[in-house]
Length: 359
Image 1: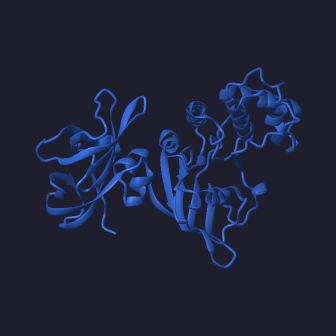
Image 2: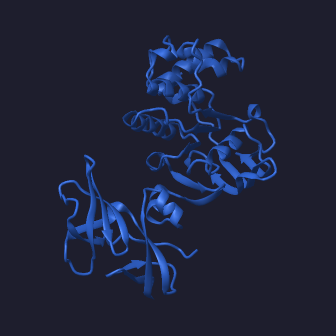
Image 3: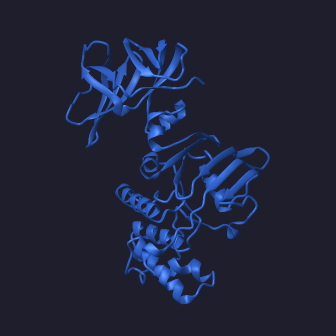
């Protein structure tokens, strides 16, 4: 069996008003409804305690829903135990057996399912080929790097040909450079095989890099669902704006709205930006640190400020700038350098600002 012949058995996942309550008053997931399409990679993203891992574990059958309905494909799995769900999970700790070789680890799930021995070995070798570990079958986990161990865990899950593949913070034990490489590997494998993948992380950059769509969770509910670009460019509230990629959020006044374009007053600056709300009045405006212009002091129609802190970050400069509307965080061109204490003008790029919906 060649790697490309490991077929996908991908199925959709759907939650209908699903809740998980611990004890009498601890709600971990609160009436969540979502759908993951077959062959899609969807990331559950949010801060610690938001409900993302509990949601993943309810898909796996490691937690049972208190109420609501969960379906995988056309099957209602709400009450089914983990052993009766066609789902594989890659854990944060990898959970490899230290006394088994790589090949034995990868083939373990197949062997306990009483598969034909020759077929088990063929599929296990194919799984190792797929994750780039051809020839590593005789090694033991202790002889592998962290990234290689993660690939073994992925191969072990893949050879079972699950309807849904689940990842629980799979890269948290790896260094930054290796995280980038392994997340690319996971995405490539998912795309190649057309797998349905639900992926949990608290790392915004990781979520943006691997996902078809992202489900942002906060306080046990869904804050927003969208593509990475939709979440970054069109956050629906202040939490999403600040959690996805960081944002400066300002109190502003919308003085007029005409044909979907709002005229906005912010400190000494006036600007226009698209809006779906035609009502003038006080609003909140989110602006990404990368979508701010820094100019010499005294420029017209700009916020005037002072550099409170300039930090060299290798590929870019980071600035904290004190202005009349508060301190602004800016990520800027490394070749344009301002020093602490410099007077400066601040303006926003045309497509940078987002007027947040009224609460």
